[in-house]
Image (cartoon, rainbow, N blue to C red; front, top):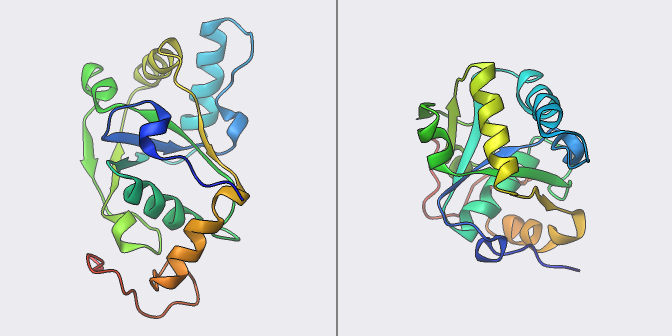
Length: 176
């Protein structure tokens, strides 16, 4: 059983915004020309989903775990594979894209408190994706076997991400 990576091992300063990818291969790493890759990624990662666009801000390994378990609470298993593209706050700031806190819709109240959203024009989304690609940032993927430890911890603390939980025992957890 492989442990999930620590944020420090992923090579970016925190805080970092995480955009969940519909599929790991949504963030194309093929040999297509950059402009073609950008168009494909904008379509797959942003334009096919609802607006405003959802992000989570993570500043610690604990945030990373809670966001992942919260997202997976709405899926078939807490151990579902999940992939993110990391976005730095300055990426959005430099493009004039404001980010706002918004209530998340996971079963984890702590993760919901880390939820953000933004709206952007298609051209801004293209610039954002190009910036990330040119910086050679990689998709952060977590596989089922990496999530075993996080699932067990989530169940032990009674986090509501575990559908069998009736009361969260996490000190900072509050619905609101």
